[in-house]
Image (cartoon, rainbow, N blue to C red; front, top):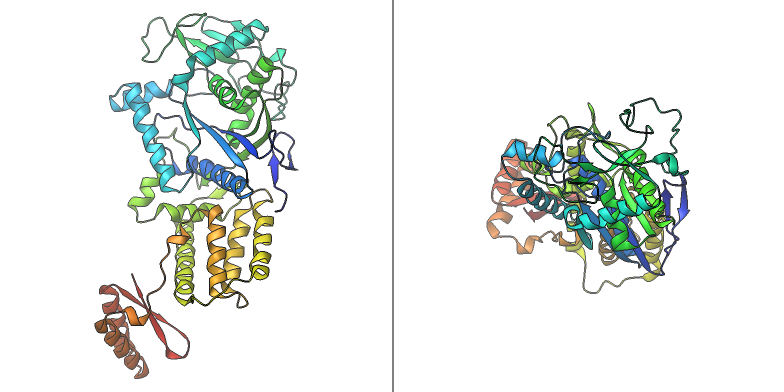
Length: 471
């Protein structure tokens, strides 16, 4: 097996992956804020993390994968101000914040299931871990990292010398208010809320008692507290989208390392955006594409998975329906090719380990080079066309490769042979052949359409031969 090489955002370079505990990977991935449906851009991040997890499993690791569910209200903007996301969802739909959280949590789980994304080992809800968040804030307070203002308890980033190391922030160069709103009560531009006090003139649906007063957790504390609860003070991998680098993940590091005195995470991996003509896909405008939108338009969730497979996770990918159509056509062609090969496999076919081994080695090189699944997909197409491999060897390799791709290629059924096709369909196909020989192409096309209406497709082959595939 090739060494696994991953791009580490912390060092800005590819590194050989080494675990803290032999054979075990502890991985935390930032999950959804469940005040609305996930859009297809959100789902790209979970897809990239799924490829990572599949590659780790392929390499023989036992993966403990933890994902948070942000079901506690936090504020819409990065500057610790604005409207609470859960309250916003509640007002929009006339439901309680708890009902909103439960509904959109289940919707998220359905989406990732449809995309063949392997669920995490542990889902942890922010609302189930308020005590752990308060305990971490108390730890930071005891070590002198906090101060209190009229609206909450804040982290003093000037007390943490390595603040901004993940994002390589030029803190002195940050424009006032560019990243976090600067006010008279905030000591530094980059300071952020650990605990927010409930407004005195407003009753929130989600609020808790704390040593500092009734309120709710800040934007970032849940991930530091819950990841360390389930994975320990230092763990192997932390994932998320690139938008998390300058604020959320930067603040997670500051909280966790100030409290524990140890390195928080060894490898940070971040996925790039899915973009449209108007830019990054976002929920803030209220207009966004859901997976269900694609399904309603006639696409399968795995058409979208195939679309995502074609671009490396660290590159932006432009979404359009033309691009999705191209991906769907490619995926359909792939399934047709596999169906055809499956129909040609004979019981007498044997597998030559030397021939298949060369492809497995090349495949490992692809996926272990920073999860280059797209190159692995190109390799799959190559082997399907390779005439030195027999049909059984090709199907074996398809099965192994699909452990990474997650496209359900094993479920593709073999093309039915003409012997299995009803006599009526065979008769229509033979009449079509005669029509083509007589250059009566109009009749030939009509017969093809009639055969299709009856549930079969004619596949023309070399030398005037044909086969029939059940639709």
